Image (cartoon, rainbow, N blue to C red):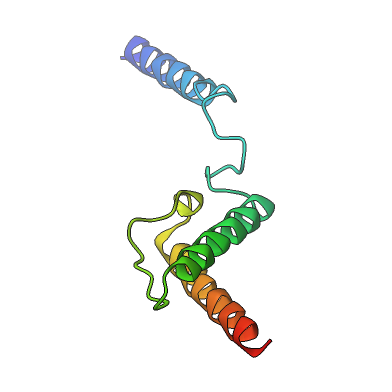
Length: 103
């Protein structure tokens, strides 16, 4: 019985060691531990997405812009972040249209 316990403990220890080393630093995304974009990178992605939506709205005479297909700069955003960027892009295009009609 004692031999079986020692073998089981050895197998568990080896498994834990190998599991801890398997990520090896290269397999994990370097942005953040969870693989999501860091704050600065997310801000840049969001800014590019907002601009892409605004450009799409400006190109559309009526100002109506479909949310699909998702513009390439927006592809890495979560659904909630994309919705926020989409609304900001529409707002940006609307403001630009108002300013150009005034002046």
